[in-house]
Image 1 (cartoon, helix red, strand yellow):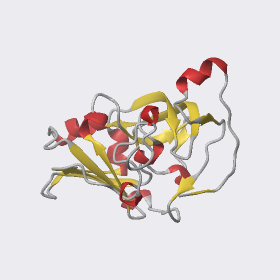
Image 2 (cartoon, one colour):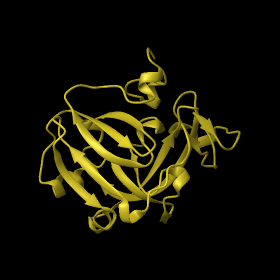
Image 3 (cartoon, helix red, strand yellow):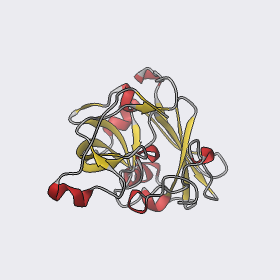
Length: 202
């Protein structure tokens, strides 16, 4: 994982209670990626949900995604590289809303997110339900920038930020918890920042 900007952070007073162990505050939003930034025209963009047998349960275009009921959240985000950014503002469509649009209930307890750039990450369904997971397309009141995962990224802010996969295009239900890209390269299968689950064995 590479970062395009260096930074130094610190813990501050009352905010320290919102900063997980081993993390440091930053007011910046560092850009990290595992490769070049993919670019997909909005006219060609789609989001797909598949069941465990790879059958398509739902597909929406960019316009159809924007037409779904939106959710706005203000959340703290925590990167495995040890920075934390407080009070970030996002807008998008919740996983629950996508399931409702698809007219389905989860057929399993695990999901793999597939993204442009051949990136994947695994997330338990329980960590997406109840408003905990979004397909986010706005950050801080503006369309999500490409370098931050635009036009849309998965947002699961209570887990380390690599789980909030950039450039998301597909959510596939899995019968078992299967490692994604970083998880197959030594990162923790779950990634709870409050338990410092950065790497396998933590």
